[in-house]
Image (cartoon, rainbow, N blue to C red; front, side, top):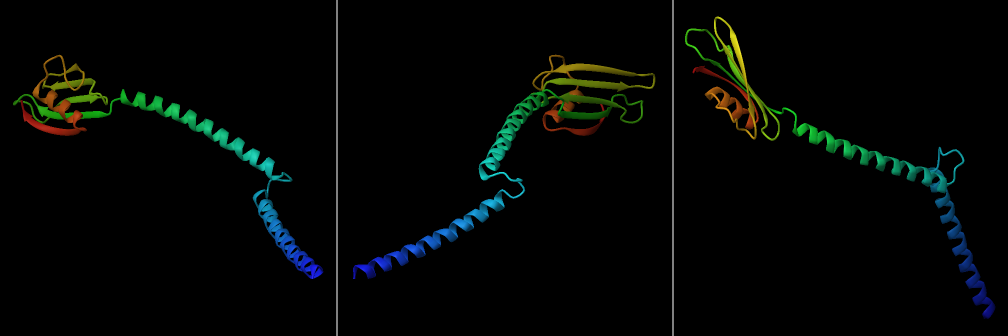
Length: 161
């Protein structure tokens, strides 16, 4: 009876060893498939190479994060809000050849240019703008150009002033 129990136990253990051997072979094939193209490298070497790539990519992402922050800071200071108003300041001249052009950054800081066109010449004026307001008095057209720029920019044409 003890011999029969030992034989059954041995048979079960033999089946278990066979099953484990097959699983180990499958796992070995999967590892070989993962390391294919690694030219004789074992899994540890392949994983080390992948970790090196991950660390390299992480360093590049960190560098790009810094560069993006610098670019965003510079962008805030660039002209990104533009307002243009064309108008005719004098009834005796034809067309809307005069204009007020507001060039502002994200904070509403910048400059507003005015050009008054007459038959005898053109005069250009510039006024500083801080936070969407000017310390110097603005004409109606200049005020409208700044207002348009602060609202996202547009071009308008108005009649005589």
